[in-house]
Structure formats: structure tokens, C-alpha cells
Length: 298
Image 1 (cartoon, rainbow, N blue to C red):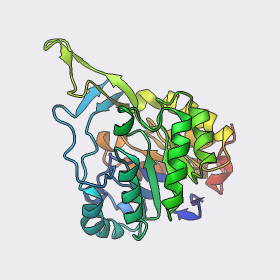
Image 2 (image 1 turned 120 degrees about the horizontal axis):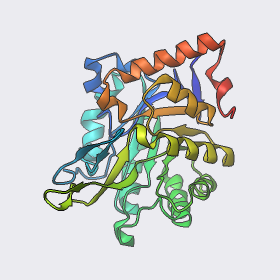
Image 3 (image 1 turned 180 degrees about the vertical axis):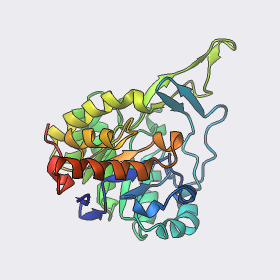
Image 4 (image 1 turned 45 degrees about the vertical axis):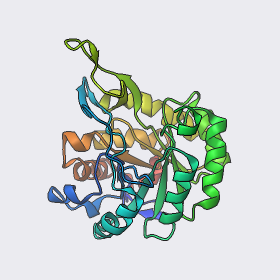
């Protein structure tokens, strides 16, 4: 009933834990069997280990949260040698989320991951390109096209490109990534926001701006998933503010072949299990025998 196939990879259900919100999965095994999830997207990985940003990293905001973690991670070698063997025991699909500061960093990371057991690569193009003054690869469609095209030449796994809602034109961005060879797209990444400490009279975050996620961004994410899925012919994975099974169904009706759940994991560590059960319950109630029937019906 809930099986979906994305780029030849079969998922037992369409619910995937989003990058940066689920660690490498083991911690959540204390709450429920993570193996019931369709998949887990790893923390954002960079070629070298990163300590992440200084100062406050997480800040609550109405109907959501802001984060400025800064891709804290053990690096590709640390992931392959320590984290991946543990993830393999989870019994679900593993998606490696990859970030970097320049093309060479991404390229080296991809080449190292090619020989591993991960089922897919999720390319985070929201990272600031240090060689282009800090502008993210995912802002200008032409820059993203050339970048994805070169990465695709190196990548031996299905390549999912994660789109930023801060792109100049999300549909053009999606089309350019598809043209460059992306096998699938995930969207949205966090929106850029600002929080102010009025008593210290300065920004809350050392980096000034931070990523906004959670229920507050859902209508924006849903709209972008709908627009993109109507424009491209490759699978779209929707995320942004999903907290219930009904939210997930909305994204699938808007065109998503699968969904990722992120901020809700902090709010409710049992969310993954509950959302799968809610989707299944909805399908039974509505007489839906195959979840793929509802994808893109809007």
C-alpha cells in the first residue's frame, strides 16, 4: 500500500527522516524502530570534519524554529568508517546528504561515497560557494545547472538535488537541475530568517541570518512543491513543516512522490512512526490501495 519507487530505489513507505534533524538515526532507535521508515537522510556531510557555528545554534520561533548549526559533522571518512556501519543496521534506505564550500570538496566527497552502501546522494546546493563570495550554488539557476552537471558526471548513485527556497526562481532552478542530470529533487530547504535579541541589541545568531523551518513554512513549501512537480518529469520529494500524516498526504497530492520530516522530530521523537501510521490509516479510510494513486492529483 505505501511502497514508492524513486530512481529505481524501493522505499517501504514514503516517509524519510530529513537531513540534519535525525543525526545518523541511532538516537531515535531509543524511541521506535527506525527501520520502519522509508529512509534516513544523513546529517550534511563535508569532505573534512566540521565543528559547526559558534554561539546559539537553535532558536524557537512562532510555529517553528531557526537553526544555525553550520553543518557540524564527522567528515566523509568519519561517516564511512564509523557512522555508516551503524546506519546499515537500521534496516532502511540510507541517503547521504553532501555539502561543501567549493566544487572540489563536493567532488571528492561524492567519489568517496560512490563505493559505499548508501542508496542515494542528496546534494545540498544551499551551501555558500566560497569561491563566489559566499553565494549559495542554489540561488542562480545557471550556476546550479553547471554545478549539478559536473557532479552528475562523477556520481554513481542516484542524485537527488535539494533545492533552496531562496532561489531566484524555484521552477527555473528545478528545470535547470533536471536538465543538468538530477535524478530527483527534494524541496524545500530552510528559508533565510533573522532573530533579534532586543536586550543585547544585536542578532541572536553569530552568523546573523539562520534557517527557518517547521509548521510556519509549510504553505510556502507546499506551493513550491506543487509548482515544481508540475514543471519537471523527475520525482520530487517534499518537505517543509510536515508534522502529521495528513500534512504528508497534502504534499503527495501536490506532486511529491515521497516526503521528508525534519523539525517535527525535535518536537515529537515518535513522529516518524506516528506519521506512517496516520498515512496508512488515511489510505484505509479512503479506500486507497496504492499511495502512488494520489501523487500529483491536484
